[in-house]
Figure 1 (tube, helix red, strand yellow):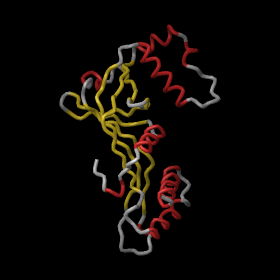
Figure 2 (cartoon, helix red, strand yellow; figure 1 turned 60 degrees about the vertical axis):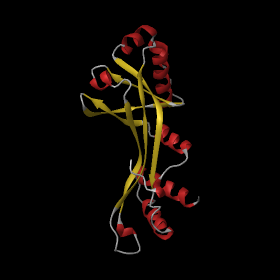
Figure 3 (cartoon, helix red, strand yellow; figure 1 turned 120 degrees about the horizontal axis):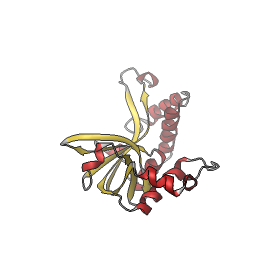
Figure 4 (cartoon, helix red, strand yellow; figure 1 turned 180 degrees about the vertical axis):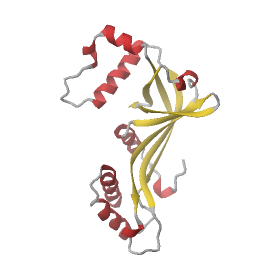
Length: 201
């Protein structure tokens, strides 16, 4: 990933937080000599990412031991030059993203697979949700697990990028923040908050 110095996320813990908060990722590998991608939730557990494919998805059939790329898409939004102090400017896009590289291992151990399912359910279910995966019953879960292929990716490299107008003056960054705060959409609100936090550093 192209990362100018001003935009590089150097704190790995920040990259991990982005991976956890924006865990619906795009997973790229090679299949039959061509790029292949699946949009999929990935759960971070230490130095591994866990996930699973539907068995009919052919991407998993030849990606074991490949070095794959998982892209975690954080908040992003359009930045209008009309917000600046001059019209001699062009539009841009602010965003946060993390790229993770690693080798794949298919899960053959039923216990490890079920633990990854449990972790995923616990992450996404509301704290007060009455649903528990184990309540579905061992026989039912064993049947369902035959329709998926679990895997884990041993993380070998993490690249993080936060493009938050750091290459502009403080005055211009403040103008952008003020405009974004007036837009009632999640991405704009998140980007404005991240820009504010970056100014305080």
